[in-house]
Amino acid sequence: MTDRPGDDAGAAVDAWSRAHHDELVAVRRHLHAHPELGFAERETTAFLEARLAAAGLQPRRLMGGTGLVCDVVGGEGPVVVLRADIDALPLHDLKDVPYASTRDGLCHACGHDVHTTVLLGVALALAALEEFPGTVRCVFQPAEEQVPGGGLQVVDEGLLAGASRAFALHCDPSLPVGMVGLRTGSITAACDRVEVTLTGPGGHTARPQLTVDLVHALGRVVTEVPGLLSRLVDPRSSVSLVWGAVSSGVAPNAIPQTGTLRGTLRVLDRAVWSEAEDLVRRLVTEVAQLSGAGVDIEYVRGVPPVVNDPRSVALLRSAALETVGGEGLAQSPQSMGGEDFGWFAEVLPIALARLGTHGSGEPLDLHRGTFDVDERAIDVGVRLMARTALHALTADAAAVLGNVPG
Image (cartoon, rainbow, N blue to C red; front, side, top):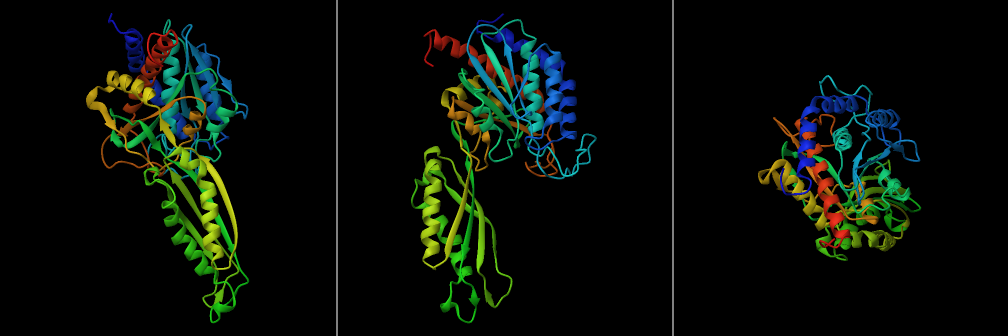
């Protein structure tokens, strides 16, 4: 027996994970073969519900009927949240493997099957312990890939009430299996959807002076608004407005009456995100009206940035050192991708870790039908997240008693 609290519990989790590795791999492959889209994860929810109940736990479904919350109670003490996302993507699975998707056009191409398997393993491993100081609340969240997604639903249903902090992980195919990526501060970006419709009377391309040259007006919005936006906010916020679709006109000699732009705004700073909509609306309107075009703007706020709390990252780092050692730690770069775990920060401190999943060959990038993982990452994930929860419970219990700073 060692002197540090939680060492025996951590060792027990390690032993449980090793003993149940094949079982967890089978769970992951079952989930991979049976993907479901956000808010339609009925079979996935029932599958997880049965596994948790068989271990004597009492999972509860979210109000929408998909997704679960399950408390693993080790004794009196604080509550720490662990979250996994359970939905898949509308992509064709292009892999030739026995566990390929059995559903045409659906695929676990972002690693949510791994996240879910890891959290299930953590819940089962902790349930096998005799005691630990507090409660680990396992949230199996639906619809991470949708806007607005399941993260906001978790917040709105009050499932984070009374908890001290929350943790999650995400597969990272740029890191080899056995590595964990950590970062304090912003690790993923806010992501909002912008659609602009410009209108004019139309006309002949021989006489643009008699009408509104709508394509020219669209071009000005495309090129000028992102540049102007970057001059109105702190460049350290990494604001990025990129247009992904432009549509207008059918004939080369006719000036069209309507045109549309669709794109995304991404930003790493939460304060800048809160004012981004007003800035975009003002700039688009001002630039378009210089050409005389009518303007309609649809701005859909997506997800906030994930801003990792320093204290929570320190707890993750302590757990990672015990799980993979110092040589297994990496500084995770910031990503301009979106992740709705950021909604949890509306309620409590959060931290997101990157789980290395690359085995051999070329890395298989996320959101592609070829994506797959080295399944040894499941064991790393279970041990990392269980130890993180145990570290956080011990630290937060001590903080409540006034022994250490919170």
